[in-house]
Structure formats: structure tokens, C-alpha cells
Image (cartoon, rainbow over all chains, first blue to last red; front, side, top):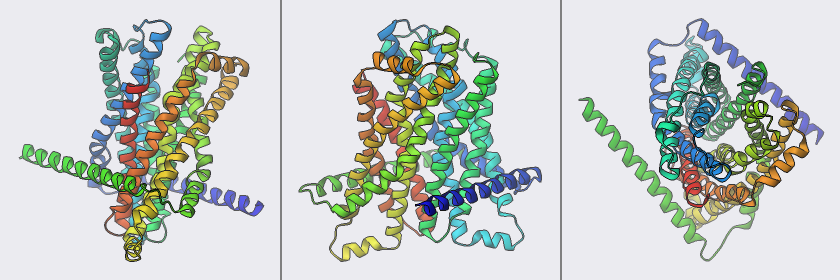
Length: 259
Length: 259
């Protein structure tokens, strides 16, 4: 029992060290301007454009659900729907937009990166890269890291707007809330927008690093790739939740509760 | 030229989605057929219940704790501004029990168990173990898929009920430490304002989410082609399909039964 716990702790410590090394080497690669030129554009397309439909569908539905639940609950207490839209967009900008987008991207993009890099690892293509004098992290992870940071932010904005739009339609259809009243951006303050950018960039940075780390650790053959992909999805989603908590708590603390 | 390519892309995407949905429905039919009369391999079922349920408790508990904490952080500014400590438990509990809890736990379950299950079945498929079973006159659907589907549906319900409790605990702890709301205030705020139905709606949702995760993860595992690369792609497709169906079902269930 003690040996098992100790083994687990040691394994976690080693994994954390490796993850840290991948992260630092990625940052170093960014500073060195590593990675091929065309690769960044290709990754922007693969991570951003190809996720657009997925993000629009999932965030659209969740926006409808959230507006429905909020109106439903308010109807039970006060029956005054005039504040729903303003508060909804405030919450979307400061939290739900970037966080839910990143949760979705952690499944789609994180799993994709881990599957791709994991397959390259088990078919020894990574070793071949190293042998040709190319740093695998510069060549593979740096473009994905930059592309993911940019595209998570862009998709957060799009996803948030889709959520708000879909929520407004639901509120009008099910509760008769006037769209002119619902679509009210007055509650959004600059600090919410700053928070959104911080969150989007932090999540966008975390997902490819975690996924790349899981892919590079893949061992064996198809089983190893499957394991790496699974680990990337859990690791990425969990990283998003923890980062959300840390950033939200820090923001609440720094603004003295006036968020 | 661009128009032509767009039409081709849309058509190819639509036919691929139709093929996947059809495959999932056919597999669902086969699973239902294998349940009449019920012949379930008990050893396989118990093994999967343990592997999918017991071993997911830590990640589900951690996710739920953070989910509850996050909802309190979002309610924090209102609580501070209006001094509405008696509403903190109500607002966060409502969001956690009906939406955030079931959705986040299902997404984590899809990453941990669904993706793992796809990887395992896909590895068996590409190493021709399923053909081996068929050669021994054992139906792979009845022997491998049915116990997994049942185990996932049962365990997601159990884990959601457990996770809801942990999430409320997380909310109470963060409310106590960051907003100075007493545990007893939180307790009465939750107990007095929420109905048993708010909790039950989340549990109903988890039944549907469990079925969706189980069917899509088993389908992509069985339908995989090509070696290690195929396994990675199958896991990726399975988590994406699960995420989309979770959001879709969440909307439908909230709209239809969530009055």
C-alpha cells in the first residue's frame, strides 16, 4: 500500500518535471522562432477553422440552455427579465465564453494533437526527426502552441457571441423577452474583456503543451497512442478547470470583489 | 472554383456525419437486440463497473469540487455588492445541480472512460481480436459492447450523484474562505430553496449522457481502420461525438422536462 502510494507520488513528480521541461522548451522554441514558416498557417487552419462548426454547435446549445434556465428561475422569483441579457453577457465574457470554448477545444484539439504526435512517436518518426538534427518540440509543438493561443482567443469571442445570440433567441421564443432588452452590452466592463483575453491565452497555451507532452510520452503501438489521447483529453480539460479557478480567484481578489 | 470546393466539402462532411450517426444507431440496435433475452457476461460487467466507476472517483471528485468553487466565484461579486449571503448557496446550487455538475462530470467521464474504452476496443479491432472472437462463435457485441454500455450508464449516474455532493461541498468551502459565508447559511440556502427535482433533473440527464458516451465510444472503437494512426483518430472522433451529443441532449432534456 505504502509502496503503491509512494510509486504514484514519484511517478507524478517525474511527469510534472517532464511537463515542465516540455513547457519551457516550447517557450524557448517560440523565442528562438523555431518551427517551419508554413506550418503555423497550416495549424491555424487545423485548430481554428476546422473547430469552428464544433464550437458554434456546442456553445450555441449551451447558450440556449443557460438562458432558458436563468429565465425559468427568474420567472419563479421576480418575473422581471430586464436584467437577464446584461448579466448573461457579463458572465459569458468574464467566464463561460472562454472556459467552455477551451473545454471543447481540449477534447477536439487536444485529442488531435496527442493522436498525431503519439502516432509519430510510436512509428519512430520523432526519433528520425531528432536524428536529422531537428528539435521535435520546435518542429511539432511550437507551431501548435502559437496557433492554439491565437485560435482559442478568436474562437472564445465567436463562441461567446454565438452563446449570447442563441440565448437571446431562446429567451424571446420561450419567455417573450424583447431582444432589444436582452441584447444589452452595458454591463460589460473593460476588466471583463481583459479577463477574457487572459483566460483565452492561458487555456490556449495549456492545451497543446499538455497534449504534446502526452503524445511524446506514448509508448508501445496502438495501445500507447490510445492511452496518450485519453490522457491528453483529461489533462487538457482539467488544466482548463484549474486555470479558470486560479484566474477567477485572482481576479476577484485583485479587484476586491468588484468584478 | 471556390464555390464548387465548398459544396464538395459540405457534401462530404454531411455524408460522413450521416454515416457515423447511422453506424451508432445500428450498433444501438444490436446492443438492444443482445439484451433480449439478457445474456450478460457477469465477469466482464463487474470488471468494467470497477474500472469505469471506482477508478474514476478521484478525477470526478476533483472536477466537481472545482465546478462548485467556480460557481461561487462567479456569484461572488453579487454576494459582496448586495450582501446577499443567503442567496449564494441557492444560486450556485441551482447551477451546479441542474447544469454545470452533470455537464462537466459527463465531459470528464467521456475523456477518462469513453476515450479509454474507444482506445481499448480500437486496439482489439486493429489487432484482429474481434475477428478471433467471431471465429470462436462469440458475438463481440454481446460479449464486449453490452457490458461496457451498461457499466458506463450505471456508473455515470452514480458518479454524477456523488459529484453533485462534492460540488456543493466545494462551493461551501470556497464560500466560507473567500466570501465569509457560514456553512449553516449555505446549508439552509440550498435546502430551503432547491427542490428535489433540481437534483433529479441532473441525474436524468446523466442517464442520457451515459448512453450517448457509451454508444459513440463503442462505435468508434469497433469501426476503426488502420493501425496506431487509426486508433488515435478513432479516440479523437469519439470524444468529439460525445461532446456534441452531451450538449444536444442537455438542451433537449432541459427544454422538454426541465420546467
